Image (cartoon, rainbow, N blue to C red; front, side, top):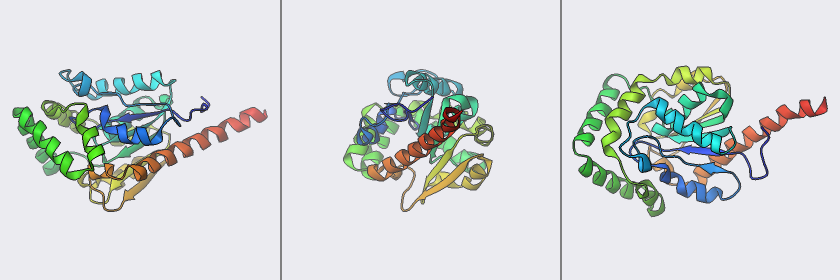
Length: 251
């Protein structure tokens, strides 16, 4: 597939309990340079109430990829990063590259137990958990980014199934199966970077980017900087595609 005049297709994948709307500031900043999509995963946003699973999430992403022409760069944060990696491993022919943010932790042992406990608590009191999440987003992020996080609705009741699904997946195997370029992007203060070297070593074509001063959610604070990372990845993929097609044209 040759990049079209509008640029490389990009599919954005959201995090737990939020929706594709979380990516609106980045999508707005990119403008019309690239065809873009930000689907809601099962159990989230417009699909609230549906059961969540990694295969179902991968299907939602590949459907968005197909709507953009069949191949795309994937960009995901947190749960979205894990789903992007799972999609790349399962469908390498449809993924031109992956920017996986805040998702280089294996949720095992005490780390996983803490998140399972928090997820059960949120699911037991979903309305309170939604309100607390909205408050936390508004405290941690500038107003436009915080509004984007909550504008598609919050779904705290889905968190136990998300944590269980991520715990049972094998992101290292997904990375090993994917031959394309991967950008592992972590905030310097992100607790989900604890296994980043294992993830980087599993990549066949990987690079690790650390964003100074950023945490897990506050990685969204500086929209222009985050957008630059996405566009830089898109430029690398586009250049690679043009380089690959040049020998064919010369024949």
